[in-house]
Length: 533
Image (cartoon, rainbow, N blue to C red; front, side, top):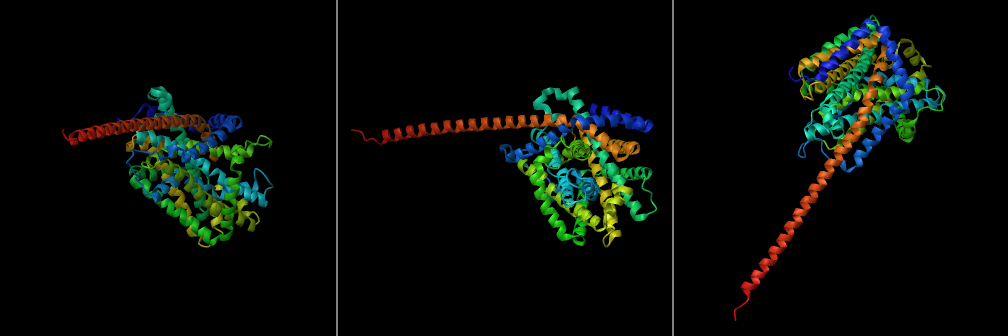
């Protein structure tokens, strides 16, 4: 326990106070947090939109900039993991439960309540997939890449502590070692707790919904969801004790195989040609409308409800998740160049997510139309978590596929929580790459308790409320991180150019001396070779 820092004690104490508050006075907790969240969404939605898009622009700039050749580590280091394992880590940590939960439900919501066009029209169907691509595409991965890149660069190239406050040293100097640095790391911990708590809540709700739908005798209510959280907490605490190269690595690979298997099954038994058409068309719509979607604040629409419920919620979710996902991605990305890193983080998960929504969302809309809206009606009556299972029930081998889906959700649940305990342990032990098991266990219990409290007092809405609040201060920290890392890149490039200039000057000097020496030798030869008279 000697590795613990003040960040651990402060964060743990405040988190404990929050859990007690939510347990003793849930109504008051809901009212206070709801008021804060409402004010943030109404008055600072533009800030989330501009910040998220700024992160995308910065990430794209890094790909084409001279800094792309810089390696996340020493010049002779090479990646620890192969591409497939690395992508498995990215996919599992970065999206996980969310893709499974919203893969069917989100496009259906947009189809019946699009931000533009008439509901249930062909234009609404196109918008439904386009906005699903938007919410799960380049923006979230750009957000993750900023945190991961910053942390990996300073940790592996400059041997800085693996905490996010260390990233701001070029900007804030030695102040990151004092109370300001502690405050930054405490904010990181809270953003992680509430960001992950949202995913744990989604996972618990969907596992409960799936068991209720497939077995019938299990009730889909808050009590069952809390039991599911308790059971899976035990599972991921066991996994947390095994470390990245065993527990998390094995689970990540399992998740990828299960997800691909489920997706291929639905691709084959579903409307295959329609799915490929949806994917191709929507990619075009997404790229064409990306600028307008990125900057739209619905100023002239009159009703900002859709924007606040979806886009602003998602940007806050990804930002709240980014300390956790970014730290984890940094940990598994050592040895890659910045260009290789950013292209990999932006491109591969974005394409996979787009195809996932084409398969599940496209099939969902197709089946819903064939059933005259019954799929959406069931989802409305029994909850978003039922959408995936209702869809799978329309195809052959539904029992097997629904069981596979439940296993996938549980596996994602365990992996996300396991990874989060590692990150929380790392951030509260001054960046240790192998935090003590006891610390990971403590954070595992805290984050599950936070998810349970938020579910209890407000359901999924309560989870969303806490997350949007937690994301705000970290958005400011992320903007400072961009400035800080640019400053560090410029300093490194200037030092490199100075070294190159110095080397060139030394070479010129040596060349000049060599020429002088040649002249001297020539003179000597001439003198020796001149015959005496």
